[in-house]
Image (cartoon, rainbow, N blue to C red; front, side, top):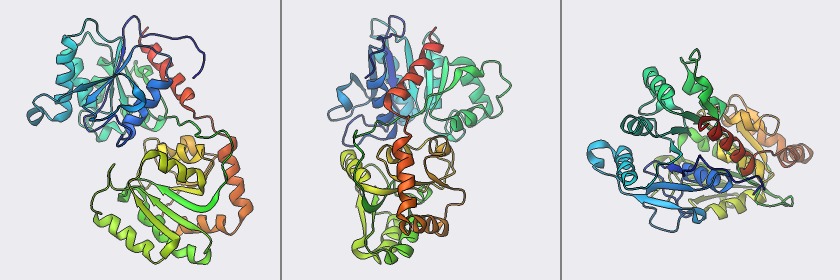
Amino acid sequence: MSSSPVLSVGPAPLHFLLPVKERFTASNAGAVAQVVRDMARSSHYRDQLVLGQDPQGPVLANLPFQPLQPRRGLLRGRNLGLAAAYLDWLDGQAELPGLLEVHGRCHVAAYIAKRRPDLKIALFLHNDPREMRGGTRLAERRWLLDNLAGIFCVSDYIRRCFLEGLEDRANIAKVKVTPLGVDRPVKKRPIKSKTIVLVARMVPEKGVLETAAACAEILPDFPEWRLQLVGARGFANTDQSSYEKQVAACVAKLGPQAEMTGFIPADEVQARQLQAAICVVPSLWPEPASRAVLEALACGCALLTTRRGGIPERASGRALILDDPKQQTIAAALRSWLADPAELQKWQDRAWQDYPFSFAAMAKMADQARADICR
């Protein structure tokens, strides 16, 4: 970590409140839990506390963690039940937080703000608020803008989503971009194998089937290459969904050239990214930011991705970006790399030589956003 001076949110601690579905453990942490872990351990703010559902195991990075049990979750909904439990817990504390960051839930931030207007609250948006409870309507987002201390967004794309219809408000400066970061797992450039890897949840919006079909089309012409599809529909291995069965049937014709791993631990995922020559992030939906894009670039992979949501903010100039992702365009792009090693090397060089997205860089921007609203 940088040697910058230790900071504090005034004299009081910084609280991170997780969504109820997030488990703050190494074995099954979701994307939001991982972001909170990375921000907390890379920030220069002191006196931090993560709060959420009981992780039922060792917490990530040994960070201070307060388990909460949702109160009357069947009546309120589990996220509001967790918010109620937080407020009850807070009543028993000697001091209030200097800042409460509510991660990923518009209606939770509003619920707490209406009951405790004395708290300084920032809503941290990991996804499009227009598709969230408490953020769908313009009036709801206007209330959040006017009554919260700040709105933090993982990309400028998400910032624009929140501000749609609010661009003329005088206080839009409190809506800040606090982008994701991923540290390079190695200092020395990794040796690559003839492997294409796709790491994603196995759901239609991630473009897994299109990529599987593209590889089934071209890999027979390149028998020395392999495809690895890493992930499951959720953060655990369960029976295959109908979509996963479609993907499996598509790559079955490749025989030993293709592998579907199912859900595997993060360190094993990273090992596969480090050895892969190519990483595909073929999202069909508007990704808020895409941690998978950063992981691929951090591991020095030639990255093939799509012009969706916040992806271009990190991928432009560092990856080959498809405007119209489908089997045919994915196949054509991959074939151009597999048939031309020099072209493939060029994109690997771009990923390795231009990577400014470390945890420290992310934490610096987040710390500045916190400092701006805590003055």
